[in-house]
Length: 77
Image (cartoon, rainbow, N blue to C red; front, top):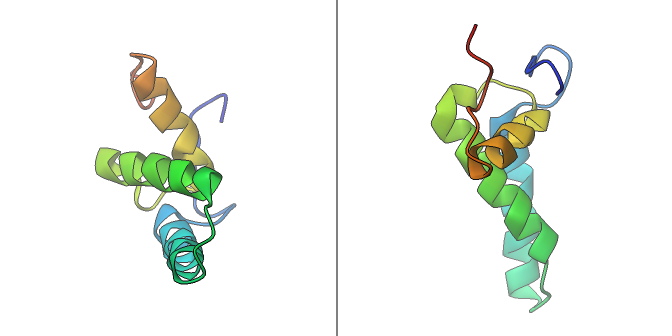
């Protein structure tokens, strides 16, 4: 995360993470159970995907936090 190396070869991809978080959110809605952290993670995953991160590791949600802070998603060299 520190070096913006969000390789999907090491971890779970953003797309797979979105699939799982969406499943959790659907079940939470079905059973009327709030999952605010899952909602936040979902927002960050969507932001990562929108910034060409769909094939990144799920840890690229850090890039979404960087965007919220006014920084670039990944370091430009």
